[in-house]
Amino acid sequence: MSKNLLLFLLLILNTTFIFSQSDEKEHVVDILDVNEIQPINTSFRITEVIDNRIYKNNIGFAQKGMFNKNVTAVLTDSLHSVLMSYFEKLFSESESNEELTLRINQFLISEHTTAFSETGTVILNMDFLKKIDEKKYYLLDSYVNSISHNAAIDATSKHDDRIREILHEAFIGFNTKKDSISNPTVISILSEVPSSKILAEAPKAGFFTSFSELNSNEAVAFSEFKVIKEKDDKVYFENDLKESPQFYAFSDGSSIYINSSVYSSDKHYIKTKRVKDYLLFNDTFINSDNTAALATTFGLTGMLIANKNNNVLLDLKSGQYYILNNNKMKKLLKGLNPSLYTYYKMNDRDVESIKKILDHIFENKSEEMEDLIEIIKS
Image (cartoon, rainbow, N blue to C red; front, top):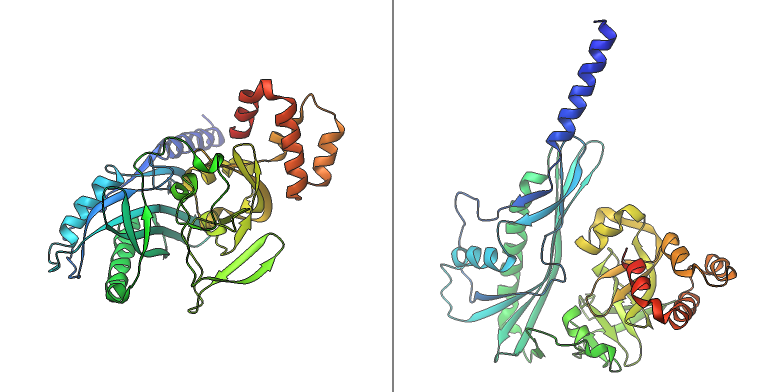
């Protein structure tokens, strides 16, 4: 056997080995796998967790193997079960008997790889609630933040540390301000929403604290937040402390505005237009077709935010986002006037034009509605 042939075979074997080592379907994160969980002494304890995430079967993604393949990240059990087990130890020394509820709206991890380092990120969006009865709660405070750490070699192994760190930071911060909270807002939380009220009713004016409230059309007023700037279809809010509202959506009683921080790193609210059972908008979203699935599954992942705008549909029944890329629009327009696709290409960033096209499609292809929905969701 020649030397060149031997080297070639070794290369093939090595490549096969590398791919086999990275062919993992998921990465398990265990926040309880630590030698000792240091208790914190607070004037409250968490005795209930409400998992308000749209996607509950994962917590984002990690990168595995030599080629940093994206794999789904999961916890050792359900989010509710894992957090309650963790809180039993974390609040074991809390002297207060005040029992609070934690509503988790977003709980995500992600990784970003550069030439010389990896960055692991955890993103947390949650509400501190005090239970009034089976359906009503006081909304005491909301916490939205992210923590990122760089690692020279591998950021994957430290996701559990980052999760514990951001939870600890959230609880200590809330503990210092809890006693100064007065006149908290009352919100309703339904365990099941039988139908999407927002589809049958005009949107109520105010903020929707999460998709669940938007779905059930339960808006609340937060008068401390004022509009500081309006540009194109974007609205910016701030309070006296220069803080932006971290709620899922806003309505002026007519139009619905989605908080861009749900899917990007920006802090504006984008105006939407209603198309059948969807909200249509154009904003900086996931850029490439092959990451669209990550966008809908993993939500906010800073490393995937693109620098171009996309037409996006928000499904008002499920809370899932769908990007209307060129391939989907070609399929949707198939069989209609060929000039309609040319019109789309000339106006692909004009939301009003896209709305007219979609309205036309749904009206003229009502008998093929299921097929159209499949194209949108593909």
